[in-house]
Length: 239
Length: 290
Image (cartoon, rainbow over all chains, first blue to last red; front, top):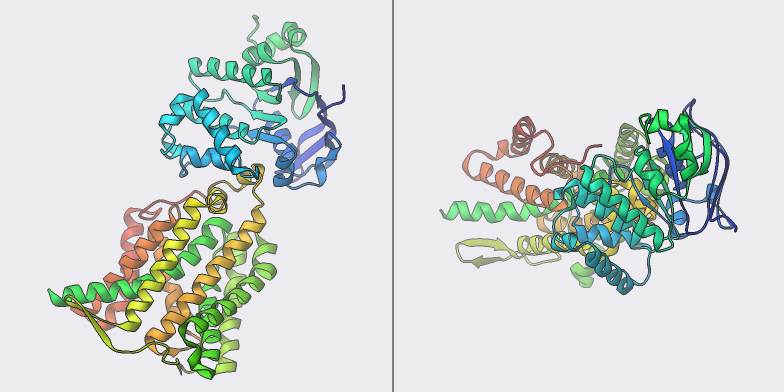
């Protein structure tokens, strides 16, 4: 199968400090892949570079037949890539409804956007109740639902999820991972970065291990999860 | 009592003008992170480009003068955005501040070279007579200025709240990166924002020129200072907050003129600024972290 997303030898630096150093990865259509790594390993840097928010120093990023390296962020979004940012990053002074509408900013058919927002409200009834509240007034879990719904309004081919479980209560974490599985079952390809390795490995098809900007392990999620080195570092020594 | 109501009305008339200029500042600062010190002089240019055809062909009336004023201010706004603001967007806020200040000085003295440094008479585009509304007496010009400015403010508020581009504008103000990643062409909306602010300034400038019957190359200074104070007092989180503060500063000035002394009028805004920032450093309605 041809890759939906293909990254070759990507290198990104902040000034002279390398953050990502020669990373290669692929995501196949409909697949869920996860990048595991500690704080500062370069996970968010990879996501932001794919979105055109950071410029790579070297390397190649292809989405289907398109070279992402030449495009601006809004053009990359139009190809069918959506983002669930780390820490939600909602527009806190805008209402829930306006946040979702902006998720469909690039969709020309506004009636379609309103229909999809209706579908999201069916899936998340709590958000329908809060549609006219400003997003900043929602709980962390509710905000995460808005962030995920916002990313789905454009009906993307690839969803980039940056630590969707970060800072949530344990019950909410389980709900988020169930939702990730649900989105994946809809056929949307997902590239997720996570620190919660145990949960992430349960839902993912394939996993990469990132350490100080380099991929040190790569393989099917089940295989990676059973490796002793992974268990020691990410799973606290017991599976 | 009558004096109070009259001064309140006078204050709203001038305050609505402060609000329009202040919104121009606030749009540039919130959306583009640019302190556009040339904005008051875009207002000034609009006042003169409106004056020119109006004094040649007075029969064309206020509407045509406003059109000409808007065209002039938009032209300068467009050029400023292309040559100074867009190339420096994302850089240190001080850099555009200094550059736009330079443009402001050039615009003032350029206009002084063309039109002379002294105030010139503005054509009488509206009658002078006074209309009594209950206990309040206002001239036709005052009423027109208030209505025009209020209309502009209402349009901006409708735009940012109820249109797709307006929502994107507010989205850029809070999180430009996320807006871009959701398909918003940030540089195009930034360009439009500066044009919109310039157009509003042009409309208001012709209205103010007509209200006071004079135009001067240095008229931007005082409006610029007051409008800048309005933005700082309100904070940049809500555009409507800036509008309300503009009206409020107008009223306070007018009350100071009526009850204390007109020589204290210009100090009032700064007393308010110091007082508000002492207790609420992010402004009355809050600011985005920058």
